[in-house]
Image (tube, rainbow, N blue to C red):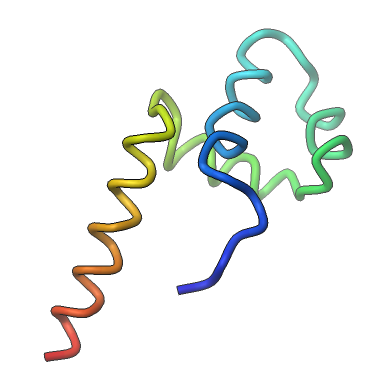
Length: 69
């Protein structure tokens, strides 16, 4: 799986900042991400907190490992 340069907390907090009224283009420029990455994060992780994201990633790794067998 591809390694990300953002922590789970950052992935959760960037969409939360948009909910608080910060313009998406400004957020993307500030964090140096594309708008498509932002919308992907928002659709995949919206409403989650960092512990759930960590757990989700662990499940994805385990499922990938199990599908190889």
